[in-house]
Length: 425
Image (cartoon, rainbow, N blue to C red; front, side):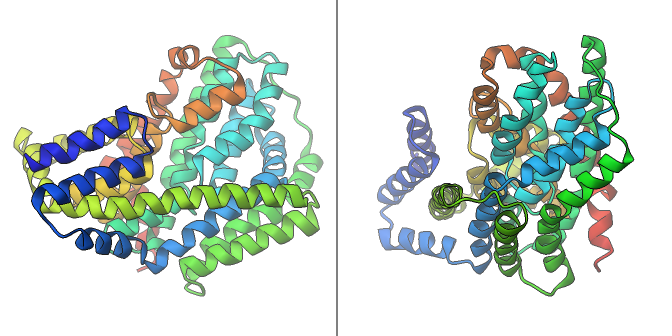
């Protein structure tokens, strides 16, 4: 009865339109009152959930991404991608994917990727004769590279929820899967572009490519500072995030000279708002997870999944499908905090490394950002591209399929995610 009340209050809050953090908090209070547990235990769980040093890196990553979006780094990365692959048939679609891989690997945010690159590329694509639904679909689905390719603040959340998994190994593990996913999306974008007869741009020449590369290097070096600092052991994740944010400010202020006071203020406000939302989710999800453990939900769900089949391949497929469905209806950060303690033991029981499972979870829940009814990237992309959601959904399925193919390869071929981390040992 207590478990039914817990989930009942939670889903009632979601249906009523509450923010996920509020729904989790109300459900948790209801669960504590029903069980007669002292509320101070709940407050202790809330405080312990956010009293983790690694979480300090999240506001720095978010702030660095906002500064780069406001300060012109995204524009330079688009020019670099356009010079490199814009000559292909339907080249702007491939440019979109390549830009997402570059910018997402720096900002670490899929929504920021969709907003920044969508504002730059979608109007140009429409002007060149591309259909609005194609522009939105490419932008939205490629944006989830930001949650897989390092640095990703969602990976930090997973590391905390998993009980101290190495953040540096998680970061490096996402490189090959992120590139693989973008490669699959690029192929689909090219095939659809050829089928629809979209135009090809002229190759600007190697001189133009070299200039675009040099101009974009200061922005790209932000990722080198953040990821390189962590992997080399010179800096902690939090320190690298702080240095990355400082570097982004210096580049956009002194090199590109596009960071005005108004843009800086907008970046600060957006960063504070996003950080507050993430921390509220972490706090309430920590107390919510305490009740899930009390009700033995991880054990029950693990038993339910393994009872359907004793074939490890089938169980892994079921785990992916469950995460995909959950990603469609819930916020990504909340799902990471709630589902990691539940499904990680199942995955490790099958012999999967926690690092590999972390990458798989990022890809699954990232796809949920592009799917209705709670797909934040899909909503942002449709607003920026001025395309109705139902129109975009009708033609987005090939891009979903591309991501799913990459997901299956990462799931069943551990080398895609584990080869680079193995080099660190």
